Length: 281
Ligand SMILES: NC(=O)c1ccc[n+]([C@@H]2O[C@H](COP(=O)([O-])OP(=O)(O)OC[C@H]3O[C@@H](n4cnc5c(N)ncnc54)[C@H](OP(=O)(O)O)[C@@H]3O)[C@@H](O)[C@H]2O)c1
Picture 1: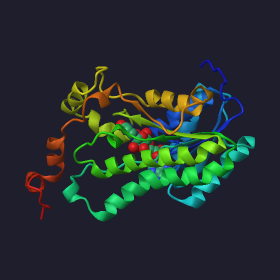
Picture 2: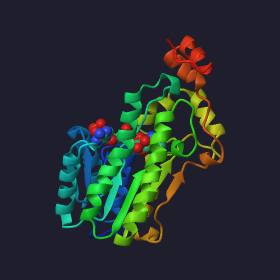
Picture 3: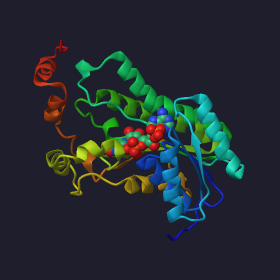
């Protein structure tokens, strides 16, 4: 792969670095010269991501850190390791997040709290403890178009990604004076481990196709990675506090109706209750 080395000498810290979007982003950052530290909870998948990056970019500097993005101690240890790679930290990409497909009237408080925690607190920890180690630079969070457009039965995830975008704007405002830019990429459906179930049925994919002006069912992790790379690098030096949709134009339309899928998951009786505004018994 040809490298223009625009990120030569820089160091990047990526949580969820073994995931589809995290590892694709790490690969593009490494391609352009950044040393990358991938953090995740499983050494096997981290090593697989490292191997994949080194196959494409043989001279890349790639280190791994096993830890939980929800733990301040684990993240701080990962940040320290990243900083030690070149004596500096320039780029942080917190990618950890997610939430369940479940009607609002079937959600319990603990699930909502853990979804907010998983999506917002993990990014907050990376920003809060990473920013003081940077001397200027760029933080790029991974939101979702669900953070902007409501998606029935994904209310906890919608709230979490909307909150994450609020955190991005607030952090951009407060860290701008330190020369740290904070932005987000807002992917639409993207083919990854986490979204695999969406690709199992043609009917679901067709519903996405109807809602996507560019006429393809979902993007690839590399599509998201290119936006991460832009927001991480000098090309976006006058951009902060933004969330950048990468979704084939999906946000121009709406999210698909997945009532039939959710009915399969929870049963007709429960869904009849939910649709009457009642909690299922
Ligand atoms: N895929 C889509 O269609 C889509 C669309 C819009 C937005 N997004 C967003 O994109 C982001 C990445 O999604 P993805 O599809 O690339 O996910 P993915 O392929 O499932 O990867 C998630 C990664 O995060 C790691 N991880 C999970 N929990 C962690 C924790 N507590 N601490 C550290 N690492 C953790 C996982 O590894 P371990 O389990 O080994 O830790 C894995 O490497 C998410 O925020 C998601 O909401 C995805």
